[in-house]
Length: 146
Image (tube, rainbow, N blue to C red; front, side, top):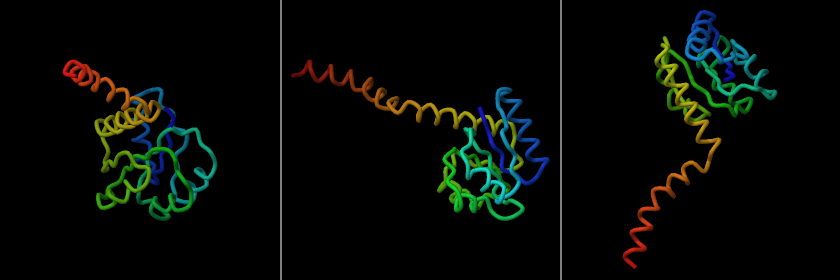
């Protein structure tokens, strides 16, 4: 899994990188971006990233400014010390909102959420197949009564 971290505190980005690699040694951190400006430049070109961990308060502004300047199509997990931005976070491509200091359990849950969502998106017929399976017994019962 390829991840980008947007975080302006080096100790926090190092800790998150450690937690991620501890949970899954196959995780590759492609970049650690420390500002709105560098994030806009990074996301202005195509990236191989599959997931973004993003702080909200960066040295040069709020990370929401990034979304005003470039389109980020990758899922985002926000990591922040502030809970007042939760609703705004879900107006962008957010799949989770973790309050700092993040711990391994919360990061693991967020990664599981990402994996479940990815599987559903890669197999859009999964829900339809589930509905069809559930409807078969109903259809059989209906045929017997007609």
